Image 1 (tube, rainbow, N blue to C red):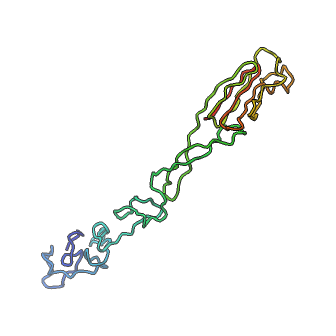
Image 2 (spheres, rainbow, N blue to C red):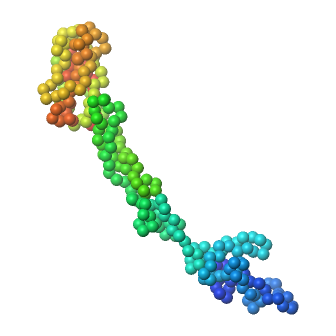
Image 3 (cartoon, rainbow, N blue to C red):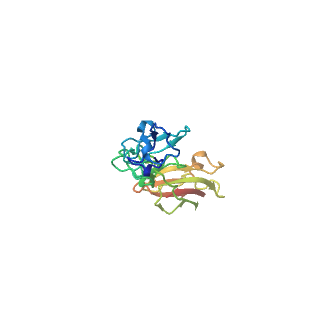
Length: 250
């Protein structure tokens, strides 16, 4: 007999019953001539008998693990477990999941894909969002893609000031907004017209300085931001005896 799966064969099995005889069978049993091998269902069998003998019960009642797909593949078959797994993941049978047994897999683990998403955080209402490039990661079960991950756009903060001033055109910005507008010591001079709206531009926002030395219709237009009609990434700040603080997103 043997309790080692690799050593078992038709002549060396896991369990036997002794042949009744007089005198009794010696202990330990000296050879196989004293044994009648048991059925695999009765703790007998061997690797290659066609029955997967998962365990046997020893005379003291202990359950002893025996055959598995690793030590007796001809008796114990292993069914790959690849549902909700990725191609290349362990299949539980000593191999990896393949395209054939992972039909739900549409991507590889840790695979990334270029994507675009809209950035809206902190943007003024007149800006519709900034389209930015990012990446999306294959999800944990490889059945689809996680949401597109993008960073924050670069923000440039500047100021424009002077009497009746028009800033240089600001190019390459997806969105710009006024942050503040403060007056110089010129009181109400020149503010009747308000800050200019350049030709070829559309006014997006007007702002005034906090106090109101002039009539409200004038001071509220002391700083203006406008967007080009032909190039949505071109902006312009205009002031009139004021300083405009603004920021732009690239």
